[in-house]
Length: 406
Image (cartoon, rainbow, N blue to C red; front, side):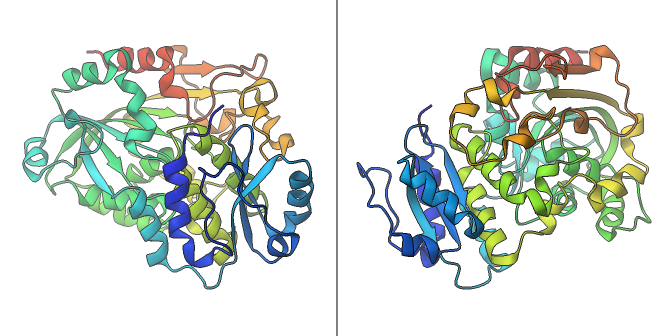
């Protein structure tokens, strides 16, 4: 594996510049100057890179001895050592997100980055629409650009007469409920969309929040969503939950958040589906503000949000629901050779590295075979397809095209 995220790493180090103990170490240096044991011990967060695989990882204060041992074997290069001097504010967190991408409802007939115009949205009133919603640390382009392969996106644009949109949104600065409210704010009040939806990862919780029919919900945001959705979404047709965290992930719990950060840093080191600068931004936020943040807590197995969504009425009851999931054998995979500093025990369960195999399904779901795509099973795991790799697979693209065909 080769390290391909130079720009994202440098952007993250620029954002973190006030907290860096020494000047940022560039990736162009043949051998960055090693940091002393005193410097390492005096920091809150170390960002390190495996010298062979290029995998970026974090070493937290309680893991200093682990870093010292790894450095002794010559496996890791310290890219930056951070000492957090002040509590990060919401504005600082939003600045990190904005440096990665602006929030926008995109019109995908123009490619992966162009916001929909007011005229386009006005013309979409009452139309059949396809909406894409990405996951944590991602973007519409990062999550779904592989649909350009074999003409899949062009076929989808033709199927929906150009009415295909994607929602770029912030996933560490905002909760899934806030994301859903913001999405609705982009639509005309009388849009009346007849919508099909494709979502990935944390996008599943954003979509479930968007479609929660809970005008008197315990969560005020869910109640606000239900009120604001009236007139904007008239009908929900088909919903595709791809590697969706419908029942959360144990990695997002406060006690395992360090493993979550290093797992996602590993994925972001090699995949366009996750942005490395956002993962580093969340690590800084966690060190600054503590390991229980609303935007991440929502992802945890058994979170308050998931409990409320599981109990609430939803527009999904009248929709046709499709699922795609994976059971990944980490130990036999290329990822297993990256040297990542993660608890291998957490990856020996049935999951796609981030989301457990069974957590993709909605409560009590028993999908028909034609509505379920599984890469591997608990009885026969596979070592090629993990959380960010679904849309690279021809069977995934074919599954989507078949389902939306008239």
